[in-house]
Image 1 (cartoon, rainbow over the protein chains, first blue to last red):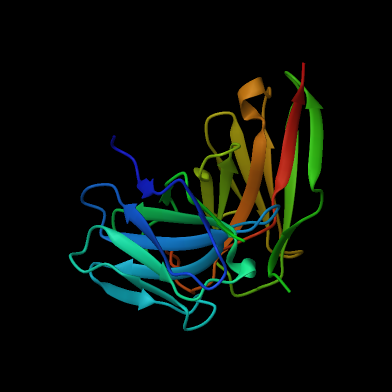
Image 2 (image 1 turned 90 degrees about the vertical axis):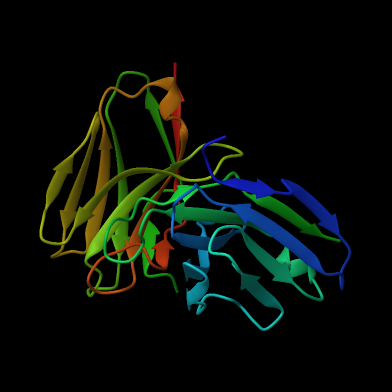
Length: 116
Length: 115
């Protein structure tokens, strides 16, 4: 499809395990964002990529969280030693240019992570 | 605490009536605000945005009002339809100068349309 694609849509894991969540943005969008959304809350900013580089990773909660975008397209959010508090929907969004242009982000449907 | 929030968690309106969803923000340096709609099981969808040099902006059936004096933002939806049922989030840009980097979202208002 033409939208932002996220996989897996659902992931159940055990505490302490390693998890990877993938985001395939809209073709040609240079800006890519990861957000985390807990139940009943608004999305919480994690990290922003402009091209291949992380322009702003100030939202990552701790060093167990890491994200990459090696070729400036697909991004992977990696969570090490998962904890129950990491359970949430992880949203990815992309936009054509990012900085200074528009707040219109195109979101995927999210990856629901459940840590048992 | 959050710098962006909403007054009411749930708003119920009759189909065909107008809806007003409110949002308060506390960061006086914010200069760009956006409303998003999120349907169940989906990602947020952009509705409308407004910059701080404006106090009103209209879209199709939606109007956003910005009152910088009291740091208040509202979204008006005209002639609500069943498809308007969703959670609505206001968001602000935490960087001066506009742009979409690091949007801060409020907690959301659940809009319920009664038949």
